[in-house]
Image (cartoon, rainbow, N blue to C red):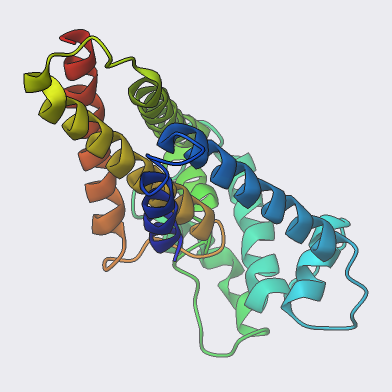
Length: 232
């Protein structure tokens, strides 16, 4: 859904070429609006006064009121996963060992959901910290943040670059660079959407390849786009 939103944003930005705002400025305006909507939504959840439901659970969590059944029993899983992180904070328990590490707490979970064991933290960041330790989590987040920052810098550079001195034969090069900036923005929005989603779920085989493919394609666009800018 977030990837589709990115495509819509880019289509709107691209249609403004001959209008009031430049595409780069239009991207910023739309993204600011998205952030404002997100802030309003968070405030709504925080002040929610309903008696039950998912929104009420989020509101309780934001107020520090936590119980084991919150988020389809995620409250229990996250509580004891954080305890596992405290026990081995640096290196974790090893890749693919979450189910073994959580085994001592499976009995308590079965009281919430019968005949079920926990093999995923239902939160990628907690899962990585349990298996690869805080070091692994920091390295992963450092790469992702670096990728997004470099992508934003490239998109901004491409949108602000003055092409007025280009010869007519270089118009195609200009259009190609603008196209790369638009596609890079779409990839970044998709990546951010994935990063937000895995706070509440875990990476599954059908989705993870798409995420890493977008990351690889974004790396390629940043590299080739910066080379084009340097040769301008």
